Image (cartoon, rainbow, N blue to C red; front, side, top):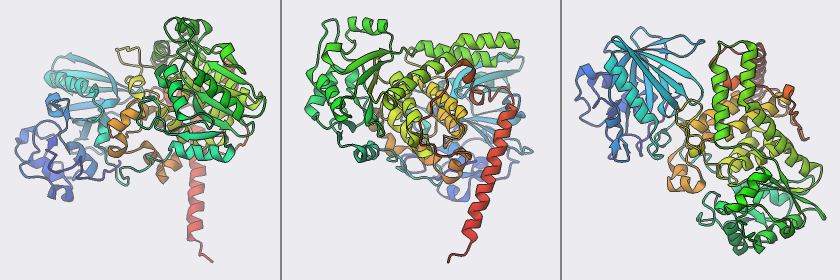
Length: 622
């Protein structure tokens, strides 16, 4: 279990903090007796006022709590839009049995509800560690009562299904209401990342690990046709773009401002990737606002001419539209549209429709339902799997990315990718195309840079798209697992090219989990502007700092990795694409023999690396 570094600024004891002991009032003497001595000494006066009957732990338990347990129990008392967490917690404790799935033994003990966690403490005879569940990871909750007990089923955003068997009907209902209220809070600044203080990490670490300036320096070494513009410094030009973007050197900031007014949401064409071997570029934007009047923008046309001029002489350009031709035509009626062929000489338009929004979300939901249906025959299950069309979405995404990559690598063409808003399938295609073409994007650091640059800073609205996973009964139209589809496509690439990616499945699973519920602030909000307003970068920890700790990084690394300077072209034939069992079936059935074998290979290679490191450090220096 990780320990937490106790801080007195914003999340520990101090003038701004009041004691919150799991929500049943101030801490009693029994809880005080379990605190680490250093924390107990800094505990403010007046914390011993609740009756012993309200204590969450039996007095017979003697071991002191770790710092992590203490901070969870005795954290600050933030408000939730005028309402304190304490007011949302209907009961302090209950005796429960926790069922975690077919492969995990049940746990018995005292369940406590805090502002951000469910906490299960085993009884005096228990040998298990404290069990924690971040409440934001709860996707849906079902409750049933029978006689003098009840059952709560928690379906989590990481696809786990947990069952709590609770003594007492009233306790069951109160805990269910508390979880429902606390797991659905919409306030960003009262979420757990603003109070998470892991040991060994400092606020501000790794937040500037992948700035746009870093990638621009790489581009500048390869070509002088591009520049780094801070035209969006105050986010007034495009609220979903970062402060700095890479644009053609020949286009000034005034022209960019006029381009932004011609593109939906202000998302004018910017550089996504420069392919040095062919001298071509990959760009992304949103749709032009041509409308039924067929409006034009001279500055937008100038920008795309400058893109071709900055490439090799005679380089063609392709506009890859992720909508169908019919959808693009319909958008023109409502104010959107496409680039007119006559207005953009040298550019040809291609339509490769990709599903997004509700159809993609429904596909995800049906896939999870199929994976949880263990009663069907094999033929029935395969039919259900095919009907959900998730692997069809994987195929279409990889095919479109291959088309973009092929255009750059083989046709030596510049590629502009956009759909309507340019914040979903556009990013899916540009990021996958880079992994196919760019060896650096297949390294551990390069892949993290890619996710940061092409998804987080590029304005994918994580707060909206990942508000719920596959179990929620709510079906808002703004939710969609586009980022999960990207991770699945990357997993397919790693399976087909097991030596070419420096990272393994563990990193992809971690990104999936943290995108939906995380103690880190990396995936909070829906744009850089929102993160700036919420002070996310100064008040929360970056996920990259956690993943790049040496012990964690070693576990996420692919031990079979061999740098591959060539492009990797995946097969999208039906027999080549497989269900990602490591994600969709990991809580349901034991791992496949191949997964077990792979784990053993990883353990042996990791052990060998560790031995070699120890030997190298023990050798005397000459």
